[in-house]
Image (cartoon, rainbow, N blue to C red):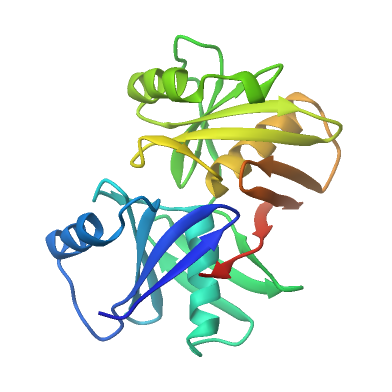
Length: 235
């Protein structure tokens, strides 16, 4: 097995290079359950017409997309010598652009969809490849993410993001579906939270810094496109 380990602003992944080797869903799920341990998920690096990212959460189930997983995917392609600085690859959420920028990895995120679905706590339901429910709070550090996140995750079958508004920045904590716990970061959650914050707070900014337990992410708005940028390390 060609396995390596990456962390992206606190999200931790196992990278499995299966280029030239066809694996079934069941084989992938078994590999995840036997190798991920306390990491957040496993990323399968495949190549068909071009590169393809297949992402599985810690629970052994496929997810359509993972923002920090996609950034780690780009870093791996670079580290393995598959690409230099730019790539377009496929995922179950569609095509993704990836770029190396100033030592960090930036990706173009899937188109955002909104829904009026509501849970027992007021929030904003947003799909960024995967569903998120964004809840604004006064003090994110004192939110019981484990208890409240678990309840709302099961109500809405979505990832739950708790967001505190700062001065044109946000601080976020996420309960992740498929990990079934709070994670140190969430790229799709950062994107969903920045998108909702920008609209509700009427911020006319092109970049929103997002603080998460694992560090900082940048969500960048360019016309109708949204990009996610931050560091990725091979550990």
